[in-house]
Image (cartoon, one colour):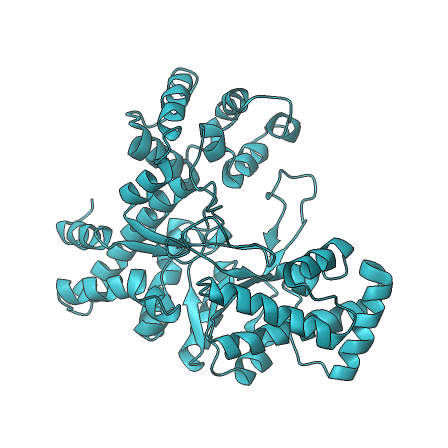
Length: 428
């Protein structure tokens, strides 16, 4: 049974207006339109597929939104034990007035129709933010995003750089870069100039971070001007078929240049480390990637030492890397622990990982959580899960075990939940 003390701590944390420092929200289409936007989240499709639902039924392009929801409802019965299912029920109760604790054949159609009517309201996204007690969310913007048509204080831009680092061998990526920067890339000098144009564009439009998702094998290191010119020449000539050594040298130099730009423009560089893409190629969309426990932060030793003025909020994909991350944040002034990502985003793992971070890392260097949401409706249930865990850890490890006052514990929790987001990303 939850104690009264834990409930009080939780309620005070729940009153804190949130800034979500990492999402995949589209600011021009932030909220959902039907339940398919919610049940289509990869957590549900991959779990339903894992439980036996054929991918062809899930990803059939010929079916309507309502029919797809009906199919998914039939397939999600075996996942009602998961935390993801509890997010779904929370969303339905919080936003659509659902009174049950399970979606099934007897109730989903009525919920589909009533929720669709609510989501059709022109102010739905703002209403979701209000009910979620969210001030703003960070975005994940393609490097060629014009950043137009939305409030950049509410939807905060973040320059996502995966394509620049890992896919510049694709002609379409280079074409996008040229269109966005008006720089024709034929030399390293021109490529560096184009990257500078991107940083100028993003920082002018209130960007608060640069970010990248990185495979386990990546170990960035400096590359000389002469070597990168040779590598770029080969990539411009042969594209993705260039020799692996050239592709690697180019990606390392681009990555290093991003860190240099973050230093120059005073942007934090979010590193999301450890994802192997396409491990399960016949899985559903976004349900094909897994972590690799062979990853180590020692691969970033040179980077962290070379850029002491750049703040690196670091996310690791699996709990097995959490102690190493906490230890790096313990030693390196420029390393910040950042959220509980993907396969670490379940209560039992968060509790263990969060407790270790809270005990081991300076209180100013911890960003407690981010939702990683694709639609606004997911921000509230995910953060609520984290707040409940945070309240439990603060109660047990600090108020009970270390005799902190309730007020002191809440102050600490508030800093981890909101304050450090403001200071790390320089939000006034």
